[in-house]
Amino acid sequence: MRITNNMLSRSLLYNLNNAQQTMYKLENQLSSRLKITKPSDNPVAMENALRYKSTISHVNQWKMNASEGIAYLDTADDTMATMTEVLKRAKDLALQGANGPVNEKDKEKIAIEIGQLKEQIMELANTRVGNKYIFAGTKNVEPFPKGGDTWEGSNDIMKFPVGSSLSLEISVNGRELFGVTEETDIDGNITTKVEMFQVLEDLKNALENSDIDALQKSIGAIEGQMDVVLDYRAQIGAKQNRMEAIHQ
Image (tube, rainbow, N blue to C red; front, side):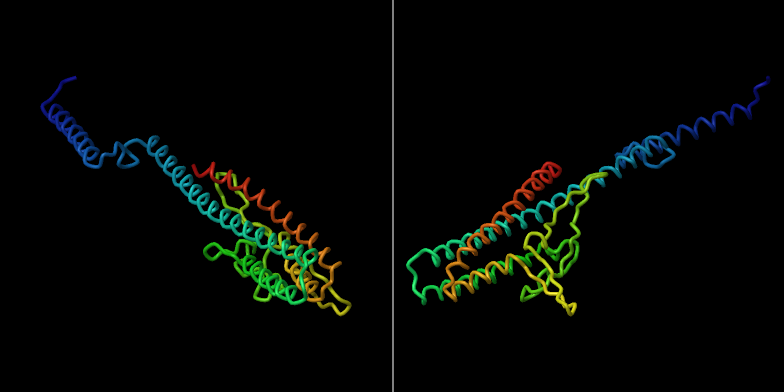
């Protein structure tokens, strides 16, 4: 095979062009500080990089969800801690009214305070984090509208995704916590009863009527409500620990 001047020229131009492309690539990598600037540089490495980037994005989102979940659970725990204190105060007042040397006027004063404690519990029942009501399930409404006679929440539990196939429950079932029940009369009318509210209302009535038997019954009912709240706080504590482990 005879090597001509044209062949030598084409070979030289080809090598110069390759060298120029390599220089351009290296300069681009130096200026951008990126080894791969376009898919054609290294298709396999680019695919891996995009997959890693997507994974990192998901992990960051899961951590953000966990952070929001922790705030949600902390608020729920603080709210139920306050409920426990309110119920404890109601129990102390009930014991005072049932066993202490109290006159009728004192019982009236105690009954007034019980009414205020009931109002406080009803306000706590509508606690929210941002625009989410912590005892309303997945519905974004007040679970107990003003007056507390109806239940507008949802039994569906709110969940936050914190992993590729992991979602943790963060909301508390308000219907179960507060003891919401419904009764239908012969005419088909539905009446809602909220046990935690009703217990305090019954205690207030017992004090106003000086009904010792009803007072004794109210004490046991309040203790039952305190046990329910403590059970839910224990569940919340376990969820808090798990969320914090994910968030780290």
